[in-house]
Image (cartoon, rainbow, N blue to C red; front, side):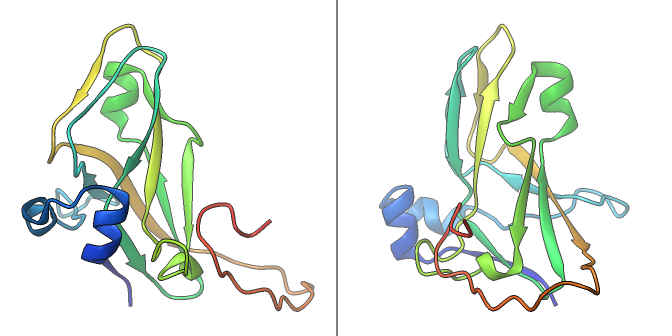
Length: 157
């Protein structure tokens, strides 16, 4: 089982804005066509990314998935091809234990950089990233891992 959820209103107010109307109107990621692999995430906010600029963008979404699954966040092809906009980490890896962590409920963020020569303008509701679920494998000779995630981004090191 896997599903997307909005972050709580309290987390939304902390991370994004106290605008309850905005909280009520944004939508969960969905696939655009029957054969789409990726779930399109839409921007919760308006923003402009100037040439050379980097911005951290909140998505207002958290995701539940099975322990042997991962959500890979990948920039939409058109953003790179048409506008030369990229994710700073190229591919985001959302582990199953990121869900409901104590720091931020598992709120997913992305960081974008404009490598192009023109402003990249995003309006609320524009598709800005895609997420693809996949299973992952581990080696059979792995030592037992007892560490558990407690915090959010970058907390496993």
